[in-house]
Length: 250
Image: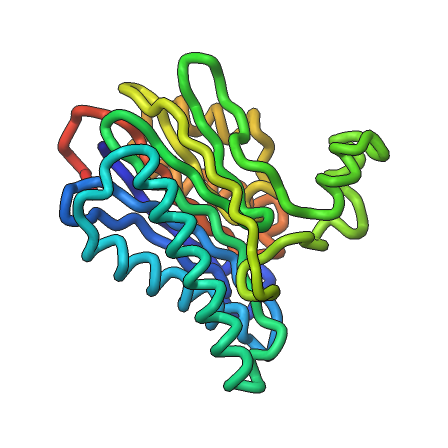
C-alpha cells in the first residue's frame, strides 16, 4: 500500500480551512481523511482540525479493527463522537458558532476499503472497471440532479452549488454514509475537497492517476491543474494506491 496527502491554500483564499492526512494504526491499516471546514470567524479551520485530530488519535491507538463490520462501526462511532465535540465547542466558544465541516474518510486494508462521508468532499475509485465517484454529495444541487430537476451539466454551474444539506458539527444528530468496497492490487482511491472536484474533471483526474508519475507527482499535478483553472478554494487530496511496492510507503 502506498499513500500521499497534499493540501494547498489555492490562489484566492487567505487561509486554508481544509485538513487531512493518512495515518496507520497499530495493525498497519490506514485511515485517509479529507475535511473541508466552514463557518464562523475563521472557525472552519477549527472544525476541520478538530475532526482530523480526533480521528487521527483514535485510529493510531486502535488495534483489532479488522473486519468490514468492525471498520464500519468504528467510523460511524468516531464520526458521531466528533459531531458531539464540534457542537460542544461551538456552544462554549462564541467565535465558533455556526462552524462545521465536511469529511470523507477511508480505511484501507489488504482486502477492502471502507469509505465514510458527510457533505460534498468526495471519494473516487480507479480500478479495472474505470474511474468513478463512489460517494454521494450531500448538497442541494445533487438533490436537484437526483430528482431530475436539473442535469449533471447544469449542476456544475448552479448558483447554489455550495449549499450543503448535511455537514459535521451543525446538527445534534448526523447521518453518515458508509460503504465497503473490494480494494485490490492496482486499485487507486482518491479523496478530495471540492476545491479539486469543482476545478478538475473526472476525465482529467483519471488521466493523471493513470500516468507513470509517482504518487507525489500525481497529487501535485492535480493541485496545479485546480489552481490553473482558478484555484478559488482550498485544494486538498489524499491518494491511496494498492501496491506491493514498498518504496514511498506512508
